[in-house]
Amino acid sequence: MRRLTEPEAHRARAAIIEGDFPEGMHARCARCRSVKPATDGEFVSVTVPGTGPMKMFKCSDCRDVRRDSAA
Image (cartoon, rainbow, N blue to C red; front, side, top):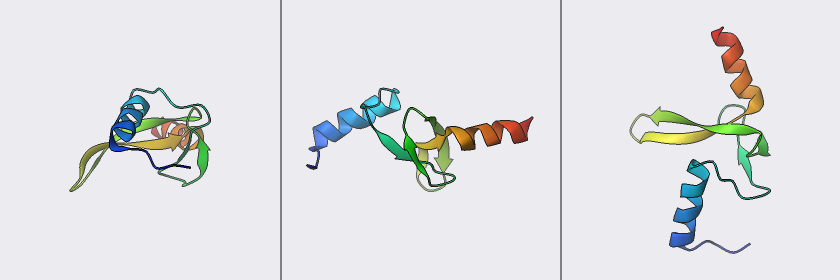
């Protein structure tokens, strides 16, 4: 696997933020740390102290747990 150039990496990050995932892309869940297909979850906005706003991936299992506990 080759390393992306900076312009390619920027375009890829922008596409992911917009929800346009490359076919076969996987992501690690920020909560349970399991690796799942990017289409099996969502990127949620969070604010990290000292870093600022960013997006983190949550798998469908962790996303559903939060909704169930909030009800």
